[in-house]
Length: 329
Ligand code: MN
Image (tube, rainbow, N blue to C red; front, side, top):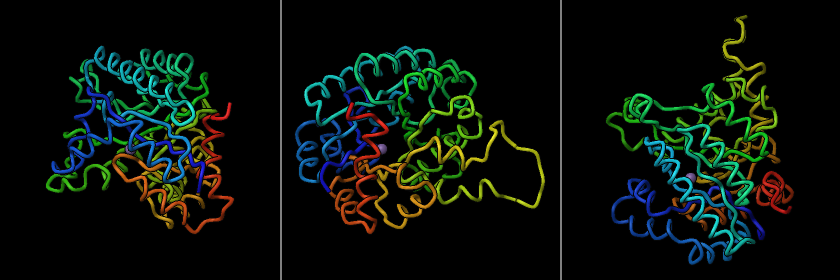
């Protein structure tokens, strides 16, 4: 399929590069490092070869979220966003940007998002899960964005009318005891999805989307497992009459289907895609690869030949992202 849009596609700057070093064996680091720092060489060639017209770029993980010094988080986010804006300006028809945000400081994050959208032309934000702030338990407390202090940030996101991509990171070591002795479960194998799904469920249950019904959140990896679990979350112990257990006014399925979008990043499985389509419909699913951690050819070869209708392929491969991110404006 030609003219695809891909939107979970990462790069690094020197300040954040080492954050990705642990995700491949040492012998692969040189290749991953090269892929992360490259924007217009191999990346552009692969896009041409595999029918990706437009890539929405975002910083690697956890990057800004794991910088407990607020001032350094603010400065590094600005540096990464300025570098990305310069790359996008060189190839405006091939690359657009997601803002990296210093969520440790909700006011600074809102201001940086405003700057990125209104001054730099970015299409939204991509944030790597919870943030660490050294003023809160020395950075050992994961700050999730359902906390009340984030409501002004969300009001600004709603005002700017741009999507917010909630991207994974690993839990802090003190919150990872369930993985003790099984480090293979960390990262994309399992912990990324568990961590990100819980964060997304916290947002849904918090009442955030009652206050801002227009907010749109994007999840990668075909929904981090939520499509498979959503019915059970809403229907557990259905014979027991109890008052609502969370502040939100509606069932979580309502928020998931009205405020969330999924991408295929790193989860190239037709059965899983079809399950997501049956839960969410094909209007809220978008093609992505997760380059450079996954291969563009693996993603594109799978998607281009997946057993779905051509109508759905065009929506998921291209038109849904163009509409959500207003890419033709
Ligand atoms: Mn990713």
